[in-house]
Image (tube, rainbow, N blue to C red; front, side, top):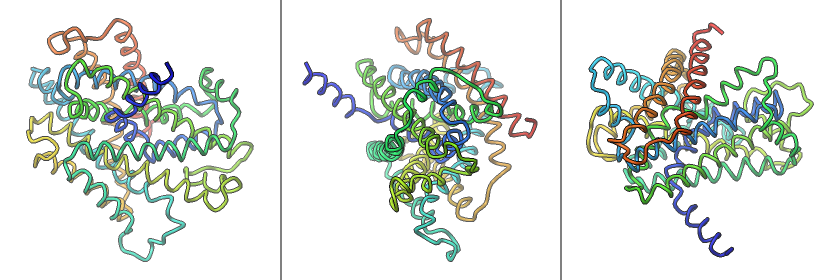
Length: 413
């Protein structure tokens, strides 16, 4: 019996792929920093927000993956085929291309900058006109994407997620957190004064719209029929669950490390200082590799998602090696490298990205729910009643978060 269970688990772990790409995408430097500040500021009390975001992410990503496996199309392709009204189609195209293409180009700078953040103590880049580490990471991301080999990209991201898991989960375990406080934080929702923005941040960095495009398109590269649906669901459950566990571990580590202190935390790099009594001189390197894996993985998935979304909406052919596909992700990657290398913060572009993504998530989630109830596309694999109810709940929550994000971006909150 145990041999069978072990064999089944190994089989499922061996088939992890597209889901890991989703996890790699949402655990970027922004997530690391947000979770760190949340833990340092509010202890364990906001763990419930991460738990909610992981449930919501799994629900939406499972639908996205099912669309890829059963419907054999990506979300962008589904939008192009499903919407017939030219005005609605133009609006959808403008919103998605604006949020995904331009927005990901803006966020790419943060991914690359965050990836090298932990190595500042080991390498002085001030004497160079351009940070060599930024160039190196850009070249690595370029090489992976230009290869056009889905398996290579997928395996590389699985490794990066594993590194992140090892670094951050071990950090949390080694600090011996209070288990009862963790359980209470997960299942007893509290909203301390001033914590609403942090809750929005924790959920907003996990439930992201471009992952819906990335997942459905990635699944098409890996699986091709109803017989693979079970493997796809396990892949999504394990990967998204691991991603959530990593985010929780980051928050827990900060909660323990900064407990009882009044120090203002400006980023997750401050964790290295707090881990030094436990890890000694290794603490800085330990956190540095966590940042490297988080930043590099997101630096690969952001351009990849932009390529998938834009290509499917425009009806471009050629797949990962198609000329237009490559030109799209190259533009996103190059923009990120330029902004990061020159120290430019594209404030106005990021502002636009925040507004556009705030609008995009509930719109894409609603569209996905519509598609998943279309028997002409999904056949007998349409959503059940419970999935639809939960889907509507997630849409309402993301709509509220989207409006909150838009008002915050416009300086009205």
